[in-house]
Length: 202
Ligand code: ADP
Image (cartoon, rainbow, N blue to C red):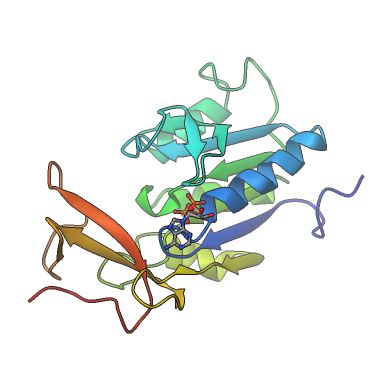
């Protein structure tokens, strides 16, 4: 059976703001791979414990099993059999997926490329822009190197237009440009917004 339109390994990237359905789309692709009896490994950064430490969860409630990791070095170790992830499986999975890819370290790019060169279908989902509207971490390079890119939009909570940005609110007020991307302990929330309604605090 043909696994994908590509011969051998390749990179697929799914990006967009929060609530754009990246996790839903990732879970959809993974479910289809499982139906095709392919072996799947899913990783997410350990700092994202949105719903479960060991699942990718969409805002709509769909879940798929995942392994929370602290670094790409840990992913390498798990894929090479030094851990429980692959249940002693000696060979690489057919599909390796990364959710919240923007939070991974720079080692994600060479790892993804190596896996693709070894014949693995690599799927990476993540935010293309941070709360300031700036390119996020390793995502720009992954977008350049991917065979396939899907850029999703959410719905702007202010006007209902397609939303391409993630609005960060701290105690209900727009976050300022200088605020750190990760702010531990702050009463913060996020909304999907279009270009017009995305604002930074003074
Ligand atoms: P992402 O991974 O991009 O954050 P999810 O796949 O987790 O997105 O969630 C997408 C779901 O979020 C949608 O199917 C919808 O049910 C819900 N949702 C909540 N707010 C919005 C919004 N403003 N625009 C679009 N979808 C939204």
